[in-house]
Length: 249
Image 1 (cartoon, rainbow, N blue to C red):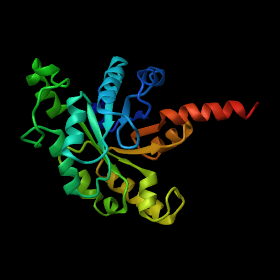
Image 2 (image 1 turned 180 degrees about the vertical axis):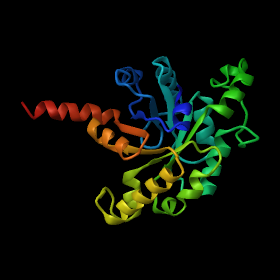
Image 3 (image 1 turned 180 degrees about the horizontal axis):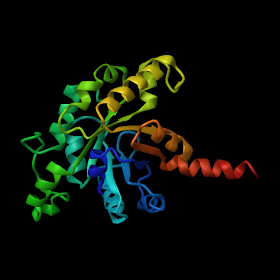
Image 4 (image 1 turned 120 degrees about the vertical axis):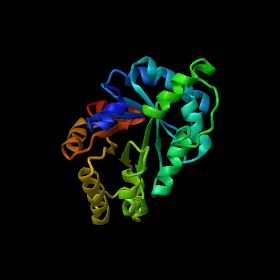
């Protein structure tokens, strides 16, 4: 079962974030049982060339390569998809209009308005028809919910045709409430509850970024109904292990 099928059936998936632009990081991360790895183009210095190389490395490990684009813009999304990403995670989706724009930029007509070109994704023109069918039926679009405006519009966002799931960005969501990083804030808790309730009622895949490299937190989120879990970040896995070892030094 591929990632699209798992999303469609609300099956649990675990992924993580790649921010260090080196294929060795992908190879090391692949020892985990990840369903997907997302190359973070929003909060890293990864270039387009490096992104394409990382996509290749992730694919070679039979893991689904996603790209979190820097913004909801045609050039960022088109470049990621043409590089061979199997899907995108799009930040700051705050309305149905934002969601539709992401779909437009990722999908060819008739569902979207993405510009058509020949690059790695289309095997440089040799498999365009195959890719055209694939992107229509199997490419993935995840809306990142990370602002209080998105909470007000959550129902219309998840009903947007072409959106396959959502993932909560807890830090930005808390920041939009004026209390960055405070996940015990009552407004934050209420916002999370509204997202959870809306998605559960509509059997819509809901995701969460578990920041700390603690698998017990992942298990907790799954018990709470989350099925698309972002499990920490490459540099946090590394940094936490180093700190753990020095505690006994």
